[in-house]
Image (cartoon, rainbow over all chains, first blue to last red; front, top):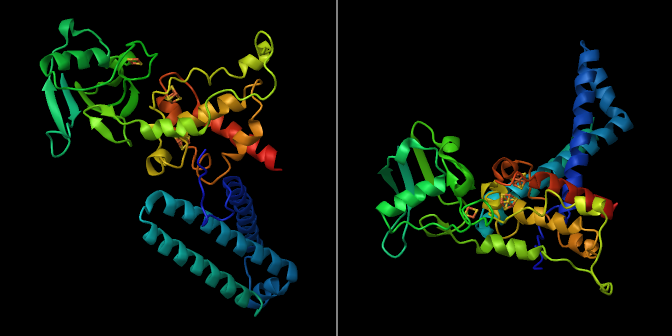
Length: 117
Length: 234
Ligand code: SF4
Ligand code: SF4
Ligand code: FES
């Protein structure tokens, strides 16, 4: 069988990407539910309480996990879209590079924000 | 009624066009689309289409009738005609050879990839490899596929990546051999399918299920392949 290869996909295995997409979706769902719940239960939230939440290590871990999940989820999704719709290899590679660069920037930026609170 | 047929003969036409034909059905009977094509061909003998068994067994007359793929020979006019009009096009997504005849090479290549034959390295028994009735029942809903390509050419994932995504038809067949108790190549078959395209380009759109003229369910088979892959990997 001529193997289908793809050097730019997330895990290089369809099963791995598929599983990753599900796991990251669950993390993002948990984070969203937590955030909505937190905002609902704290209707008169002030700056100090909000900052206090993110100074807590467990919240930083949770937020970083959600950020990494979002980046992985977006990469797998956009990679998939790009291999469906962008047929010229050059254009597809540029699109994937821009996505990868943006993902990297968001992670660094997110870490910087999180640990400067 | 009005029939609009896709016409393209690359030897004489610069581009494909739709040919509109007004036709009276003899006796106003509810004939099959294939019979209608025969009437059209009597009027214009240059019209090309494939057909053989005319009873939904050979799978050669798959085409797109008023937007939906199916076999012309077992599709009555009453099932597809709308407002006394019928639009006939070749199956979408594969190259057209002429009129309603498409080049199925890509489709067969995907079929070939899944090794559509029993693989068994153990010495052959004197008579035959037996299956229990339960083991045989596992193949129901799989072996009936007639490779008409109605499903794969209705699948957007196959349209975008016909060279990499096996497609619903090939995957249904892949599962047919994965599910066969007499086949011993399960592990090798599964590792051939583990890339990001072959199986995982299926996004569960289920066009395949809605068009299959044999009432088969490729999406379900694809789900089972995915479960087998997960089991093998965890
Ligand atoms: S369920 Fe999968 S194989 Fe079937 S049409 Fe949709 S994407 Fe294609
Ligand atoms: S699964 Fe159904 S639609 Fe697809 S090739 Fe087989 S018989 Fe045709
Ligand atoms: S002519 Fe054989 S399936 Fe229609």
